[in-house]
Length: 639
Image (tube, rainbow, N blue to C red; front, side, top):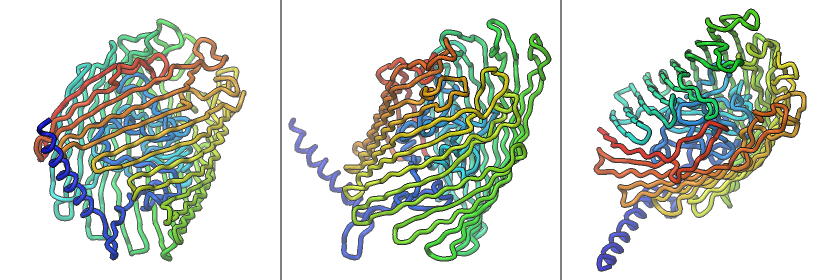
């Protein structure tokens, strides 16, 4: 008790110092009034820089500071806080991890890395299981149809990941951690700039046995961005990425597999040129090649219980892409964005041991897809009013042309610091190689969406608090499914999704950061032709209610503590007993994670976290349980 006056004095001094620093950091008007800090700039809403508070689309941003504060190791875990996104992991880390945007399929969200589309594999979706947060500067999530500027698979939206760009003296950060389930993780990060050369690199390795037999996970990742600025207007660079993961696949708890294993290897190289020809004309050119190899051995997937129908397989995916964009500003209020896109993809699967008991079956299956596209977008910015209109045509070698359009607008009211936004757009998702090959139909047409939204964002209390809400609606048609024969995939389905997304960001006092989001979703099948489930059924694994909240505080400028929680309610799953019957309900769940990091000195810190603090027993996919309580701790060194 007798130390209370001293604590009060110290607290007052720290508060005054923090206030002084905040005052210094803020901009000061000519009249001496404090101005708000500059608004973050986003790219994904229009394909060029635009302030977040003027975005004509629903955009959420997760920066590297937040990733580090919450000790997030995989991008999928960072996305759990974003409204409108449902992250579904098939059991434990390392297993198939999907993201459903606004209730649409996981293959309906385009994932990009520094502007490069990276959806891969036979299914055309992006598996977030092995995508780590190494070398990530920020993640931008734009919701609603974005096919006009991002093409195929941006039917529901786009998730764009930006790597760091070296700036300042070179430095290096090393970390080591260990914890529950025999888990060990090592990371290395370095970035900097030497004369005209800049670089950034991040690498990590994780080894864990997880909780069940044959549930081990080994993952190695490297991602680097190198650049050479030939002058102030021209930068030539390249992106490099390599990933190798080895997972045991234990299957669901009712049908365990003690030996099944999946090896996945990915690599990507993406040279790019950024050229600012004049103050009113910018060019960007990206060429990339990516490769994915998957080996499933011994592969117990099959139609005959107790036997191997397919046997060990090796899936191959190779893609070459070329993306050119130019931004022309003939006047101060008009930006014309145009570009062209080329993609050639080869996907196949070697099945040397496939059983022939049901008749001749090929030992190698493959698909080749070529796409050529062009787009044009006009952005008008007059007195806080932004109006965007654009169109795109994509030509495919297998099913011809696809047209899409997008109209979006935002208006910022300076007096109340309010932004209103709305958009209407179309999107498409082409049939995947898996649809065409295993569905025995190379004449499939793309799935299509007509979507619209309207919302607002309100900033309060000198921008210490930001709240936003958006209503959205999607009508999905041409959905690929199976008829009563189960012999051929057809375009015969339809679905509708609609709901409300809300988001809160607040910094009520210095060093306290609050985040919260809530999503209400109705996702309904509207066609009876596809036999997967009856008409009117809720789309599987899409929760009706999702709530997320987090709080982070920096104590005495040294100890950062964070707590986050999520609640998921009202989900359904396919009826595995009666396939033609209605879906079955699956349990609600919640989890609480806590994390802390203490800075011993500018070069050393220790950290720890506890995931699923309450030991909640739950499954994001029915039959595939998530981990129970897990604790991890480690040390970080900076040079």
